[in-house]
Length: 261
Image 1 (cartoon, rainbow, N blue to C red):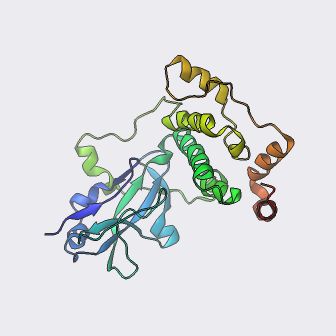
Image 2: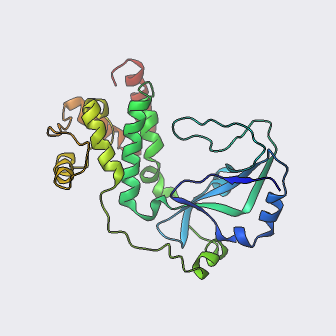
């Protein structure tokens, strides 16, 4: 039998019914070179509910699996397809076995990660439109009033529960590795490249001092200068204004087009 490759992130897990559902047996019998598509389910703070299912809500199966045929694969630096997925490759889409995304279990953790993504995109892809970056990472706050909250399926977790795995663990942590990485980006690039990003609700100077007292390496030696110019504050406020998205988009596209941001 050929090798089966599954590529998931650290905050994702395949549903527990992978052990019992006959759909999975069918998936494993697909020929080499087959891409396996899964629904990606966004859990809503616990194992009890979810707010987004890529198949139910978007008719989109995500390529998380691959029946190995030795094909080469090279992804991009971020947000890349994780397995070989040629356009003409055979595909098998699963409807019962899903990939569960736990990123919204801890809102503070999710916000920290989104801030880092914004900064990473700004330095890695300086040609990318600021609005494009912002819209990629503000979707939860912008759309959460419109999400269809549904109950999860019992068999997504039942085998994990029998094995004594508890997903509903409270997390008191409020500072994450992404926060230290952003401070390291400030040290390398200064704060100017990030002046318009929605990251300035954090007291970065207090965090810098905290990190230095804890011996965190690579942090700035000088105090953090928060960009507080009028343009900085106006653009950040405009991006966070959710009720005029169409107008905001048009304004921001023009500012980007004429090199203002």
